[in-house]
Amino acid sequence: MSAPVCLVDSCAGAVDPTAPVALCGWHAAVSAEWTTAHDGVTDVLPTPCRLCGSRLGVRWPSGWLCAVCEWRHGDAVDDELPPPRVDVVYYLRFEDRIKIGTTARPRQRLAAIWHDELLAFEPGDRSVERRRHALFADERFGRTEWFRRSTALNAHIDAVAAGVDDPWALYARWVSEGIARRG
Image (cartoon, rainbow, N blue to C red):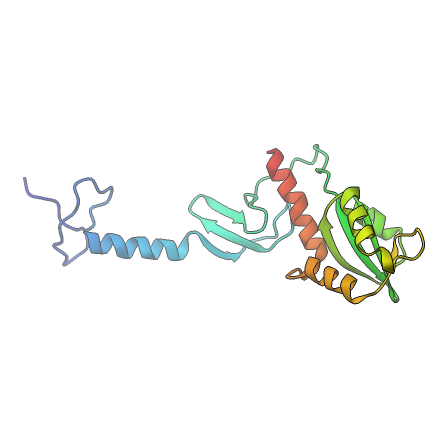
């Protein structure tokens, strides 16, 4: 019995007898390179992620995954489960003042507060909020959660917001990660 040869026309290269497809080493490498160019590639999802809303995905032979929250594209979200609790410290601007507060329901909370702009979210609960209030105590208006703008406060907000175009997208990712963690 002769050794198997490559299935590609005009190639007489030897084939590893344990190979799942009769391709010589060179043609197997070309095939693998071609496959990796088409699978495991970051691309636009066919539709937005149902969990976090991202449009960025990774295409694999088994299907698409959201590149942000790794939710399998097309899987249903279990709407019977309550969303996970995600506490955030928020930074709001109203005119020349900054409010530092915390909530587990940012949409409802921010809808109730008069403000011009949401500057940033950072993960954290009341203990993180208290640390921020202590850190910027010199800029605080009395015993409120409102602060004067300062170089230090602006630098902190810039650091928290660095690389984040939309704080709501970041919050959506934290929620989707919480859902993914609970399975």
